Image (cartoon, rainbow, N blue to C red):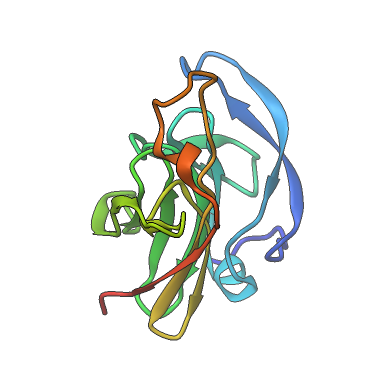
Length: 172
C-alpha cells in the first residue's frame, strides 16, 4: 500500500531521533534519500542515517515514529539506494568500507578497504568513505579522510595530501 504522505527525494524533514537508549528523542533535520518512485510505492519507510551512533534509522511517514533499521554500521555516513538491486548502500567511514543492506537491514555485501597512503599523498582504497553515488553498475565514493583526534601520528588521515573519489564495481 503506498504512503499517504508525499515525500520527495532530497526533502528535508524534521524527525524525532531516538537517543541510544531509545527512551527519549530529539527532533533533528533529516534528508530524504530514497527516490520519488520508491517513496510513492512504500507503505511506511523513508530511510535516514544518524552518523553519531552507527545506526541507520527508518521513519514511518504516517506517524513520524522512528525505529532502528539496522545497527553496528561503523560510522554510517552517506546512503544511496540501488534501484536495480533494491539494496541500500551505506558508507561505513570508521571501517573504511561500503556495505549493502537488504530490505531487512542485514548486511549482504561489503566493498572496499584501506590499503595505506600512496607516495603522492592519496589514499590507496577507501579512507573515511562518504557521499556515495551510483552510476550504472559502479558506485563512486569520496575519501573524506578526516582526522578525528588531536594526537599526532596516530591516524593515516594525517598523511593525506590529495583527496580522491573511489570507483567500485557493484556486485549484481
